[in-house]
Image (cartoon, rainbow, N blue to C red; front, side):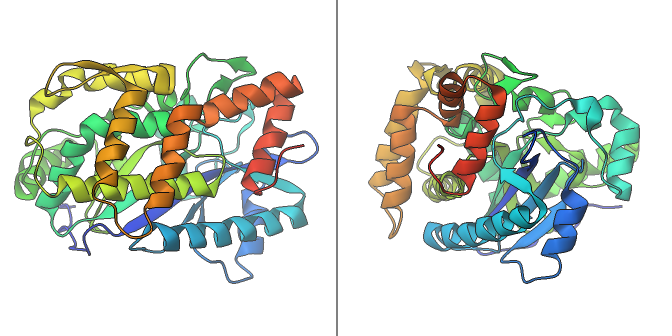
Length: 374
């Protein structure tokens, strides 16, 4: 099936998807609750969209299309409140975090949907191990060429989003020493990583996608698990590297950051993206996953090694010079994250304070509810 034409959309519009954990309030382990949650949410007006994810211990929610941070945040708060109310009726906790700290992948159930069954048959145990939780951010693009320009121009900023969103330090009751262990699971899939370097949508469609389709490996863009991928049916690019944050406030701030970066990049004031930008891509990506904001990244243009924290703060200052109405709150929020640490640091502190993985999950549920953990 040929790749569909890129649907032009309003430039710099925003949409967010969040994959969320469904947790038993008695054991604090993941629970197979998505069929019940979806049935309950389907009987009332939901402020966004909610769909199943690959296993029954998770759901995905998404917002409408927004033009600015404030409206996006308001809707995410409505979505959160609806989820919390539904969870309370079912005795199910809802929370963020890129991984659940002690769930056993072998106990997960694949949701009864044809595509999920196909994925399970193809990838075996990796499908159940894909019970990990990420935030995806869509940014509208006027054309396919603009989408590919932004996709590749953003490559040097991918570590920023990994580090700022990191919330998956624990797996199987052990501190992995990674700030984002979730992305290690994504990297296990053969069609993950980075998109091929092309700046023409016509070239991408003809010389890459059509050839991949002819091999029988892929049928649509959904088969690619790239860090950033184009979504022609939406007219967007989709950033996929963020762990799901503990709060919707951070989720909205990350989306606003991406929007502001894309606005700056579309000014065409930076060097044009090139294949050479990817010489340091995997190294920088690893540094962000492993060390978070304490990592070191190499600038692909100057070859200078810099602290990831300093690089984020410098970029926030540059964006502050181009401040749009309503963006000061978003920039301030992320500036504080850069100084204080990400949700990965928060979860480690909760583990130290509470002394157990269960206590850490209980705190994550409270953060999502917008309540102070007690």
